[in-house]
Amino acid sequence: MGTPANTSDAILARMMALHPKIIDLTLDRMWRLLEALGNPQEKLPPVVHLAGTNGKGSTQAMIRAGLEGRGDKVHAYTSPHLTRFHERIRLAGELIDEAHLSAVLDECWEANNKLNITYFEITTCAAILAFSRTAADYTLLEVGLGGRLDATNVIDTPELTVIMPVSKDHEQFLGETIAEIAAEKAGILKRGVHCVVGPQCDEAMDVIEQVAARVGAPLIAYGQHWHVYEERGRLVFQDERGLLDLPLPALAGDHQIQNAGAALAALRHLGADEAACEAAVRNVSWPARMQRLKEGPLVEAAAGAELWLDGGHNAAAGKALADVISKLPKRPTHLVCGMLNTKDILGYLSPLAEVSDTLTAVSIPGEANTLPAEETARAAQEAGFKAGESANVLQAVDDIASRFPKGRILICGSLYLAGAVLRENA
Image 1 (cartoon, helix red, strand yellow):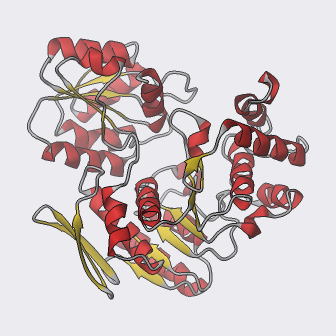
Image 2 (image 1 turned 180 degrees about the vertical axis):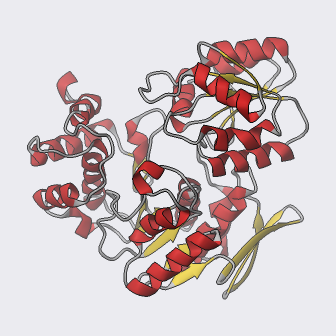
Image 3 (image 1 turned 135 degrees about the vertical axis):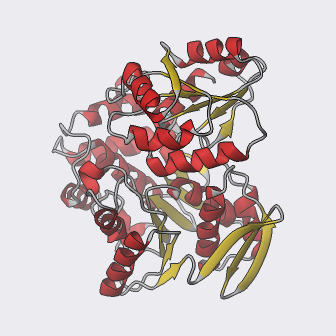
């Protein structure tokens, strides 16, 4: 552990001040700092690079579970974190420890020499630096935002790329139409590098195919080169190598079957056998994706009510979550919801109004871009909810449990809210 001024939290706080805007998409600053660090991006184990609006985190987790299931050592980079920054950087299967994180952050801080750079860019450089110095068989890189100009898009020749379903999100940065957003996601395609493509609407698929043809990237596309579906409580996957009959994913929801399909297509391309593919779906763990909370202060406050947590936050996630709820055993369902002010609130809430009974709105604690609880409640009413608001999640859970003791409580709306809940419930 470093001195208080040199802990990872202190260094991260300094890094936040290096650029006035949180998001500023360009790769120029990345190339400059990576050059100053000796180009660690050129020294990584084979890279699998994942983009997409929804599902890339779960898919990455399943790929990691599959690779580790056959004995591989795997680096993984994800964002945002839920409770601690360390969650973003997994070195050869283990979360980066405090001493190592502080050291690479400090090295990046010194090499950057106080020049303009975003928080995500400099911390991505720190992750790449750590990965380059630790032996592993694969590096899994999850795009932060978009793809073409994302800070992770600095690998000349990855082993494989993956594009999960594209839908509307972050329009202010990626474009107003599905086609524009898909073009940004397809920016991770590289000449001669295969790309696994998850289920897409026609508009997105057309763009991905056009970009792939232009750059010379062979596609492994859902519905063309691989298929996945549920049959009699099992997951069935089929590609040109044959059929796999596997357990359903450990993550809840029909959308996880599609995510599993993309993970299996990736694993098969990487030479995984059936045992590794089974490990991918059986051993996967990914917090705040329809996670049942079973202990902690919030569970105690929920008393006899079920307590669930989900971090989805856009229209596609709202639809997927509504589908999950509709297939759970029948029980009155009450939402505790907090969202960012940059999201499509009505698009997220409208499908949930059809499968839930009430919504209690909260502001996300410690988050400058939170939508105020009263605005979330107003939007929920517009979406068709019987909605109110509460000062915090604990109060909301306690109030719902007292009024509906045998109900189901689902905390949802944002990964930032999910992180706050996991910290509070620890």
